[in-house]
Length: 246
Image (cartoon, rainbow, N blue to C red; front, side, top):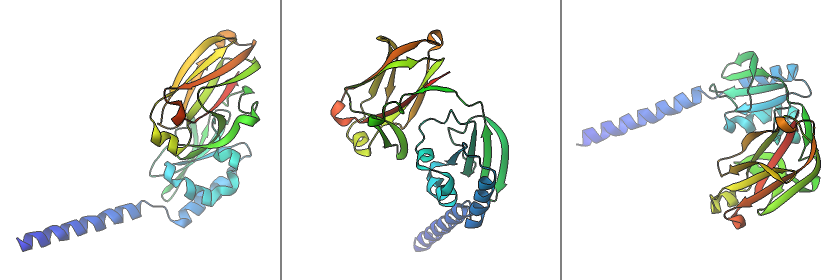
């Protein structure tokens, strides 16, 4: 029995050492990070976006290319207006906002750099920029977002909005304590000139982005209201961002 126990302990120890070796072998070195950062820095344009994947490498990425990641860039709630995005990743991870054509892909050891290109959205109206008194940098799923703060029940009115083909709406539950205390969804009704155009629900599962079709209203100017409600309003703090796209 003692020999069997000793063998099991030895096997467990070997397995732990092997697991640590595999983990360490997949972690990029400082030299690999520096090489990837130098390449991004040499080719980055002023309006380019930068994202890191998986999410846990974000602080490491900012350590090496933080000079290119302003507060506005780090907390950007909608990247659809960016025509070029640099994705810096490890272990083959892909960032959910790095969608488009892969124009270039380079590997620096265990760090991959991809330049994503796509057609940039044309923004006719930025609701967040139009209500600076409501705007703040909020934490949603432990990531920063520059967005409009709302405490349900709440409404935000924008009386004269030029409409295009769609409204891009993104939002999430702000504050860890709010998510800890309740899992009740937050409902956002989007009304145009008093008529409800969409109803969207948001829960504790991070930032969610939806596109609301307004093609039939394109070219008009109208009043837009965001009516925010929740089943448990005392335990909900909501943050959202919206744009009108041409």
